[in-house]
Image (tube, rainbow, N blue to C red; front, top):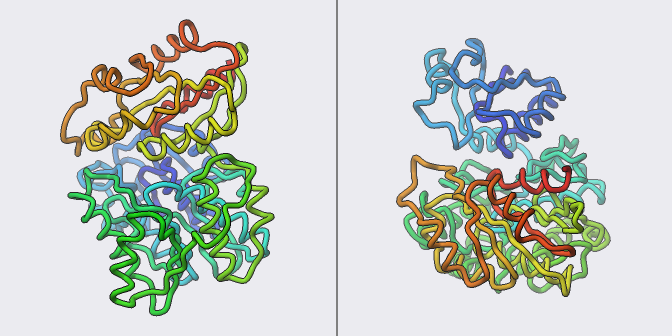
Length: 423
């Protein structure tokens, strides 16, 4: 097939594009800007354009795949429509690609990427040779977010945003937790949980759901399923919290899910999990600055994730001062979890905030007063402004020798971590 991917630089669609290319299809695509992900795609022979005016869409393409960030009236989607090209969202396309495999899907509010990466390492080490699509770069996947396997197993990360995972055909589901998120797409927590119920309902008869019954959200969902006898549920909490190379209770809980999966598949897992070293932007140690500050890059952008990351860093670096550089991700999320954010940084010594990363301006329902938000956080704080201004404040006024700096957020704040450790 000839496939064109609009938004090809996204963490999910980039993996799909690379996998289809590896399967022998002709793949090209575009994004609003180039990145390390698009550079890697180009190195694999995929044509990537940083212009999305519609001119690069091949008239003879068989399939046009678009990310959630590409609206229906985008020039490239209009071009595809005018050419009569079949259009699919990323998750529609991923579902169609994987549906003839035995699909192991990892879902949940937090921990999806890490749990998928852990499971990938275990399956690979056991010789099961899975195909993998994950929402982060993984050392065990040659630093990439995908892997072409030669077995019937397809391990993938399943995102709930806008019900995206309802396009998948799971055979086994690992559900990490269900705290609630993406309230620009869901009316309330019940609506959010119902999406998970609908996803689990896509399992075939007598299939397996692995989850944490100690998690309130997961338990609420499972109690409904138990009443209807819809699926076999395995409680991951029955497994021990094994010691890992990576820090944090949440990491051990992720590993519990993978231990349960390994039990089901009758393979060994513990030694593989103990050698797991983490993934891109998940408590990723970038290095030390010239001033002796250890810089950690982390994707955390939800209050639960922030608290868990700070706790894990505190565990790893006892006695050291922890400074957080936090870029809030969307006004809507900041408003919805405002009070939760205020206490999420309790474990930090100092917090610097930046301007909000406005990822979805088309669905924002309000505007946050970022300076007031910063002042309300229950820690010593300062509003840093733009990324460049915040970095300047950190370097000139805030950071001290032997500090640990956590660069936090799902947006472009990651560039600061890179800049501080590369000079």
